[in-house]
Length: 250
Figure (cartoon, helix red, strand yellow):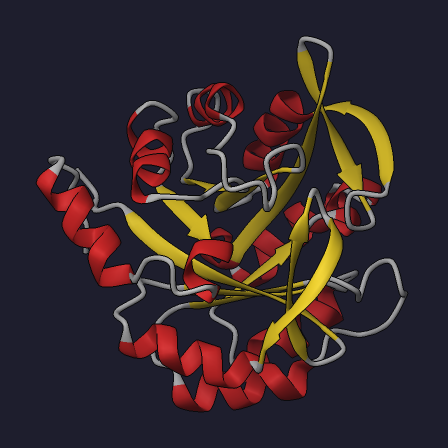
């Protein structure tokens, strides 16, 4: 059985780490390079850097920050936000990213997934699925959760895998920043629908929530932001808790 991963997320806009609720009400948290170094020393398994303003503001990803992080942090680094084409993916990888994540571009042009997988390999493609509940199902949203595509999130995750995605970053817009737990139903449905790793995101408020996402939701990894940025829990505390619960962690 593969070890489960604990992944801090740096949501960055205009060079500052931000955090909000339901993809809105953003508040400043700190410097992305300093936080990345801190989580690296705390034994994070990976890091995800998301330029959350790049897509809807129609600007390029702030790769100078990515370059600075990659010089000081030696764990897998995923970079997303503002990735629109093959050249953007190449630039992110050259800046130091080990993997690249994109959401809006994939939904607007699914062929980009296949083309990127053919050029760079599936192992470095993390397709982000921003999902919000609509009745008894979940729809995919683009542009930082601003536009409903009316596309079913579970069916889209399946198609992403078929096109060549290596991982799914599953973001629950409903649970984002609420610290009341992950959307376990959504997480389990997606995890059981695709053979590739699923990273659960949105809702982490305690180690118990992360455990539930890994065990009940059957995610392969969990993303955490609020509870780590606020120093409510440390990564070592979370890993110790999971180990005591019988979860294999790195």
